[in-house]
Amino acid sequence: MTEHRSTANPANLLWVVVAGATILLVVHALGRFIYTPLLPYLVGDGQLTASDGASVATWNYLGYLIGALLAIRWYRPDQIRLTLPIAMTVHVITTLLQTQVEPASWLSALRLVNGIANGVVFVQAPALILEWLVRRNRTSASGLVYVGVGVGLLLSSFLVSGTADLLTGPARWWPAALLSIPLAAWATWYLLKLDVPAGLQRDDGSFVDKGPLLDRASIPLFLSYAGAGLGYILPMTFLPLLTKTQLPEGHWLVDGSWLLVAVVTIPTPIIWSYLGSRVGDLRALRLNYLIQFLGALAVIIWPDPRGIVLCALLVGSTFVGTVLLTQRIGRALHPHQGPRLSAATVALYSVTQMAGPWLTRQWLDAGGTLVGAFTLGAIALGWGLFFALFVPRAEDWHARR
Image 1 (cartoon, helix red, strand yellow):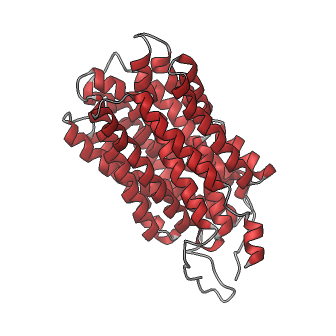
Image 2 (cartoon, rainbow, N blue to C red):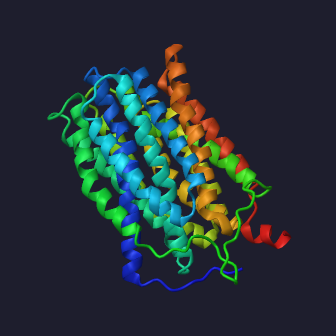
Image 3 (cartoon, rainbow, N blue to C red):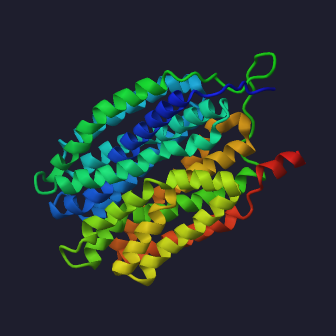
């Protein structure tokens, strides 16, 4: 049983990474996380209440779950080449339609469909690129595609704050919608050209059948990643809104908290990818969880500028690293079903992150505060760190089998 490998031309490698980063920028930043800096403005415009905002976010995360589950079914590269352009088209159309609807119910429906497209793309695009890189002995470059998320967060911050006085209500979606069109078209076209076989091949050319996803190696990885999904989503959805409720009007952190998250997110894929290659992905992941836990805890201990800045810096500098390190660990444990395992982990991640806004809404409706809701995130990240301690190193796991 072999994986046929070749070397990657540096120019080709660069453009593959740029295309992957661009497609994640479009679906995950312009499609998904731009909602976070938009939310305080949509609440201020009277389009949504804080409770409505949590509900809309929940529908988007439900869509993300559905998309990830679909990606488990469509995990082979030949299937990805069919579904990826469809998902990107759906993303662009739903983002455009968000500029035309005002009721929370209609926005929730569009965010659901947009989330489905996001879930499919966020699984399939990095998985396709990782398979391409593995066959060219450049796995360490896989984390670079997630730079697109950080750049997209920064871009989304500027798009929202830069047009805050010019647009109102649903029209606030226009900058993201218009920018998505050319970026989505080019990135999708480029990734569809990648030369990746349909699956891992035996020496006789036949494809390896898929095996079980759950075993003593992958179960603690799944449980750990579940904690990450719930833990990071609270600050990544509600930190700007919490800032607006805790600080006086006009404070620089009202817009600046999301800008801080965006700025520190940009280099983190490179940092965590490098750290993983130096000390091992598993050790790097455990450190990642610890830092992220401290970030969620900071805003609970200090619900003021100190805690908000620490939360933005520590969570912003880690959450992308959690994703890329988990994907690499999963493929190392089960090298013959990388895209399928990637889809399964993202599906679980999306279940727990969908629970975050829903639980927050229940908490707010019961009279709780946003600061109190962040406690749940800290507990979840502690859970993630605990189970990460039980994930075996790939070398040890394969040596025992």
